[in-house]
Length: 459
Image (tube, rainbow, N blue to C red; front, side, top):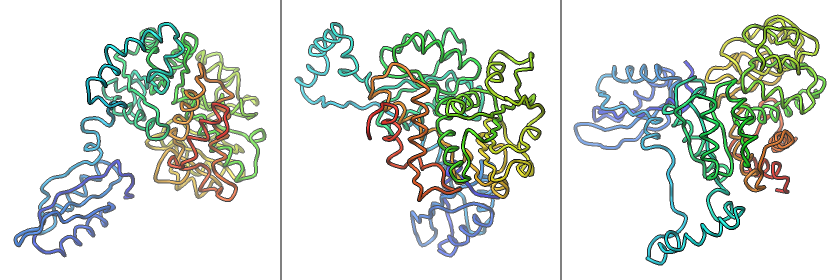
């Protein structure tokens, strides 16, 4: 059993016999059970016992429970308490509000609040453009969700979506120094969502729509872009598309193919798939086939929904038919934003030479990246425990930094293309290889380069 991310990391507080050799036995037992020990701390040593904190990572929640059971079975060891480190991190929430100005004296209060603040309010009333300069609006983004399509969890509602939106806000601050606010709406009615966002918009410099199910998300974004004078960006669509295009640009560099010449199969016709296809076509892709549960989308199929019919009309120039395996034959690129396990590893053998496979379904990809790597020239996934992680964090902080810096009122396709190019170019020719087609989210240049590309400024 492969131990993976720290998202399934636990700390066991153990009471053991006063024999430090027991600590080694515990570590060996965890390793034999497929866990990875990341820290061992003896927090108390007495003549009659040791108190030991053992931190380890597991592959999933069930695996972590198995590791606890194995340790409990050791002679001379009592598991006193088990702490889930992910839950500990979330206690009390992950973000907070802090004042940027001192409030120590009466003078401080009189300037930050009444009566001095009244002068600033009237100045904005007289010159509305000053609101971005004199308030937080110029550096604030609303992260808006209805909780209908959260990560790989589905329609779990606004309350359960809040930890994800908090995380998004924390990422905005960490990577672009933007103050972002989680807005979780207790409605999944399109009209109500649009109206709610319109009503809160005066306090924000941009709107980041997040985890709203298709096709509702398309109409919400379209209507808000028409009615608001600040940029509206649905990250599940456009953030994903930017990073996919950046990664594909570099993957094609690895195999010495050009975007306009390759055959691309996209599995998934939802929000992410639609945005990826739209951006690929804008970047110059000429042969893209989209596949959903029913098979390849074709403009000849009158039974398609309006959204799928529009997508089909822009793709599948050869009018390919059949299921995923059928359209993968001789394809150069597979991009999956659909469901786990739908791509059999052996199907990759039927693709063109030097095939590229992006299996991006979360938390479980369309194909095991390790198995895909035995057959494809370049493999990427959404997972952090394999090379080439396609992660939206590479895009959205820099995108909004650039939009806010430019005081933009809308988002254009040209901006998205420039952002993708900026991310791709962070990987130098010397660094580029099949296991490194996309920079780390912690690369210090990523957000700056993307922001500069969006605002059309030199970084």
